[in-house]
Image 1: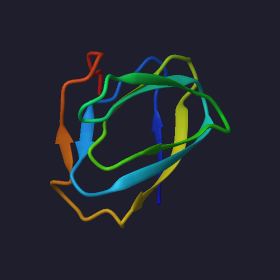
Image 2: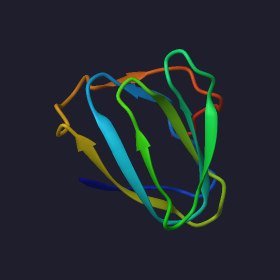
Image 3: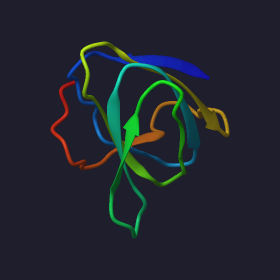
Image 4: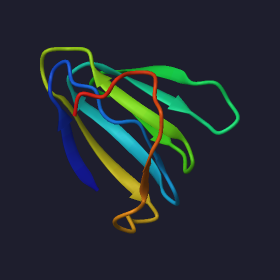
Length: 98
């Protein structure tokens, strides 16, 4: 399990995981997450405190803090995070800032 934050206005890099699925719970802030499964079209999910979502293995995703306060979340991977090389950079809908 991990706790992470994205500062106001920042955009993450778009990624895809090779072998793990994730579940996220949003603790604070406001934002948007884009997710796209291999054969599907991308969809956006609004992020706000109390929202819980999954990122299935092989799903491309990127998130953007649309507010001024930090976007804070906790997340867990299943199976446990295997280490370096798990996250693969992909092209997302937004230009990353971090």
